[in-house]
Image 1 (cartoon, one colour):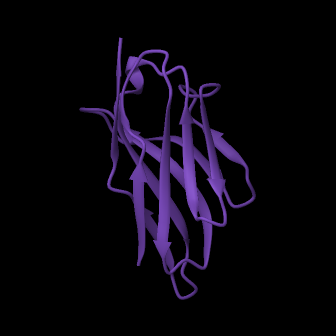
Image 2 (image 1 turned 90 degrees about the vertical axis):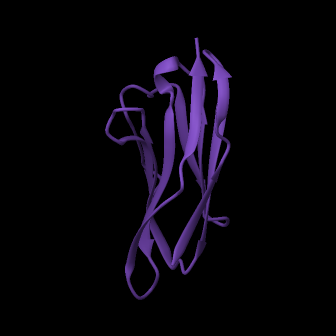
Length: 119
């Protein structure tokens, strides 16, 4: 079992910044991909940013240049630094990890953290 605990969400005015954190614990042998998804009301969940084991990152076009994903290997933690936030960034943000326990693969989700950006 791999558990994810997210933190850092909240309310901010447009132009502000927030930093999300997601700490993983449990039977983790290796992590292949760490990512942040978001889901706005009435919308499908979409990928905001991801980082693979080699360090390569991928961003949704809507967040490029404003969001930065990073990871701390030693702490099994992934971060999402969000700058220049816009009202359209308002959503529940979910952390996702995919990897290997040594016995099987896992695809784990966090509980979600609300980000609200007011104009």
